[in-house]
Image (cartoon, rainbow, N blue to C red; front, side):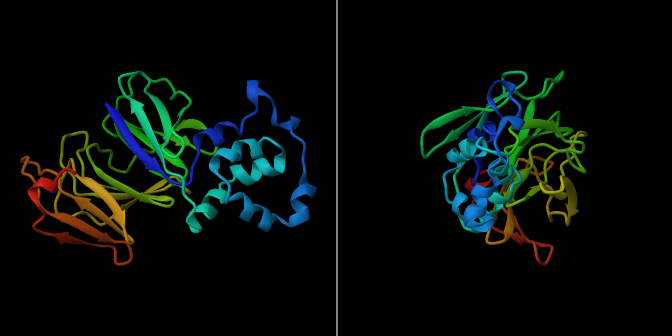
Length: 265
């Protein structure tokens, strides 16, 4: 199985270059505080966020100040605010244990190998999604989760995967927030529950439930709204309706009479 997701305004290679080669210590870097002071920190960061993400690793390796600017995450938030994006595709060959991940940059055709995931007795990947500067990977029917941090180029276990662990859910993300809806829990119950993940606080928050429980559905985020499309019911009925969640009103609206060919997109 190959899992494909997309993250904007990120570069995995630039993150890996934040670490000195051969395990070197970062105290070998020379501090050039005066270099930033010449043009001012704000102007420096503004110029930096316009560069390609490929350049960040080399810049971060120059000195402590540049390293801090890149690694504290502010530069990535500034890129999103100003519409500076670089789309990456993350893929995993799940036949390996632990699974191995690679990142592909369509604009340059370059492939990057991500660090190996932490070893585990069994971590079959069921779902994955990208949010903020993180890649979340769920295994064991959603009961366990790993987080890949693009800024530190490292994997860590999530203390809490979700309030209601699940697989086969619909999901989408915008900025630092990710939304998951529906799916199947560990007791094979079809869910209508919805949760939001905040990558800044690493917390899951319950949201109002869907009108129809569903699994194997798709999710999308557009114009400030979260959409859940198609899927199947507990009796394996094909759903020809979608649902639209308004973040401001905190309510769902059913979208009827979708083409049957569009379910499970």
